Picture (cartoon, rainbow, N blue to C red):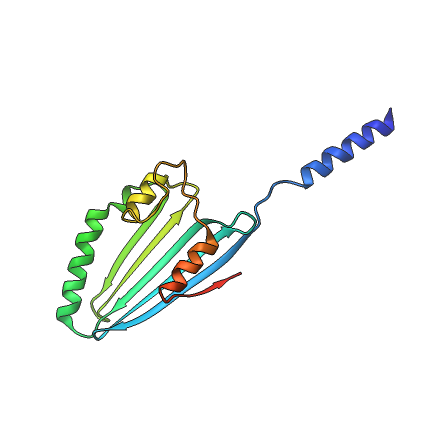
Length: 160
């Protein structure tokens, strides 16, 4: 009887140790473009489930710097108008910040997305309808396909 209890306890211990813990990995994709006297730098950091190839979260930081005050003023006005229109602050699973730096003639925009929290419909709207996740329970986005798509747009990606 004692042996059965010990074997049972060992079995329970082994089952507890072999949990379905997600093995996560990181990916960074970045892009720098010079255009019309300005520079745009985008860096996206992703956390993804390595086994399922599903993105869990994304933090995108964009900095745009221009060389003249007139262009800067127009850019700030455009970003402020779009910030009010997009309503990111009202979407569960999204964190959004926007700052303008008058001294450097630059703007900084940061968008954090938690794909475990955001609804598919909200993500579809946030991505300007450029996704095929509308109507599903949560957005399931392939890390590998994301990397391929971003690289086709000129991003340099490091997938770990």
